[in-house]
Length: 265
Image 1 (cartoon, helix red, strand yellow):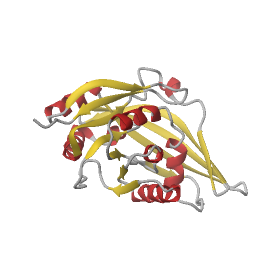
Image 2 (cartoon, helix red, strand yellow):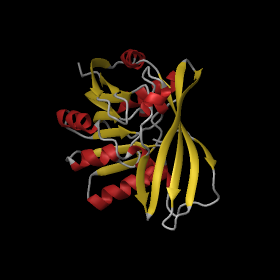
Image 3 (spheres, helix red, strand yellow):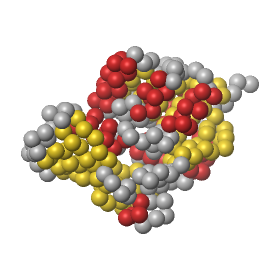
Image 4 (cartoon, one colour):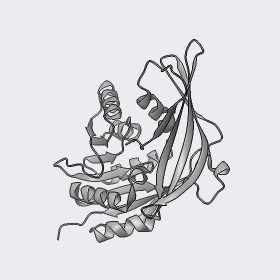
């Protein structure tokens, strides 16, 4: 699931490939700190699993390669198509679904639902998160687990200390891509949440040396993990001990809630 972004094109030229997929890969594809936890949870809860906000398949393809049956949901059809194509190319069992995490209806249940990399924080306000919790609960098997990751990009530190020291980089069709966080700032609260905005400068250099630049902003709602847990419990989930994803040199750490669906009486 991609964040709602504001864009400002700084050049009239454009790379000859799908920029949504390319920049998603550059900015998210290299992150691996959470993969051991998702693998552990999937192994402990055998059965089909669902990933919310799957993007181009960073987590979904990894879990499918471990032998799991994965359904990967994202609101962006371009990213879902790229994920499905990659799964087919690798012969992996992944079903891509284009849907909103607040309103999806798949007519089946899962042993595990994951929401990696602050996907839940892309939803606007408590009402959106409540809608997502109800959709997840409706799709979990009795005793199934929902594991959403939450983080505060500021984490109590000055913004300059919270930004990765180097840009995220990659390549596509001979082009060199670099996405650099240039500002990390807190915006006015909306619907009771804090909002942290991450401004990025994207630079693509063609094989011939032409440079194309654009600006993008990703906005995350920041709220206490206990707030989401309390809403989940009110809807019938049972809160298990939280897990965590460690901080790395380029990324803040995450708290991962362990929310269990009711078991049959």
